[in-house]
Length: 178
Length: 99
Image (tube, rainbow over all chains, first blue to last red; front, side, top):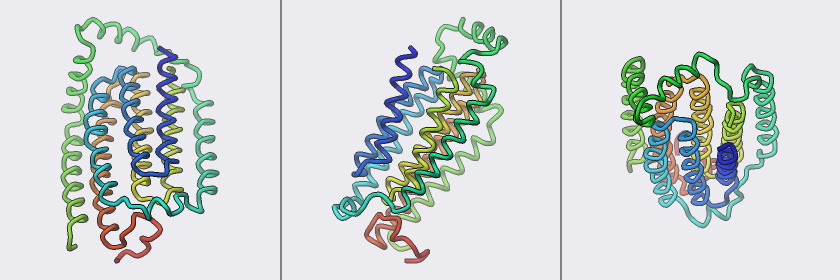
């Protein structure tokens, strides 16, 4: 199990590297697609079945198809022949490396580094109680629905308004005469 | 996999996404790198949701995917508008607010 997740994490990181360093945007998009599918499998391993399904349906099925359409509308040979990497790549690399090292340092000295995947005792008993239900995946979806339509009802409605505004804005930006 | 290792993978995705946004010239790849940043944040949410056995992190990941979908719609609208005006997807060409 651990070997499997480490392999999965390696695949995800390799796909992320492919997104950033690929020459052709199509390669970058397909690499991101594979990375998102790997991320969905990792979510399954973390007992987040509903999020894994949403990740596959919305990301891999919807957003990536949108991106591929965008690439095919815009991509041309001139774009591929121009220098892909900006002159500011080296300063950016130093900045991002410093950010990563700082975040890793904070993680290493945090309370989470002390507990190697172990859970507090109270949640372990709650986990044992919930494991009595027949189907854990269905149970995950039911519990998410209760939280989503209970505590997070207003954010949920706000998200629907955000999506509506974003889609109308996208159409407005892309239409012929602005 | 332990939670710190998962968080580290999330950091790595986040930092690679920031590097892609800063270093690439192709507008599409910049948008894809922003998706990488979202993915890193979502992995952190799910990892801590699994650690504390609390579903709020997973609900936030669902919200994050909705926000990413909105970002993709607006970003592709901008991309097509840029291509119509400048006939390129190079972000360095877009220097003026009005074409």
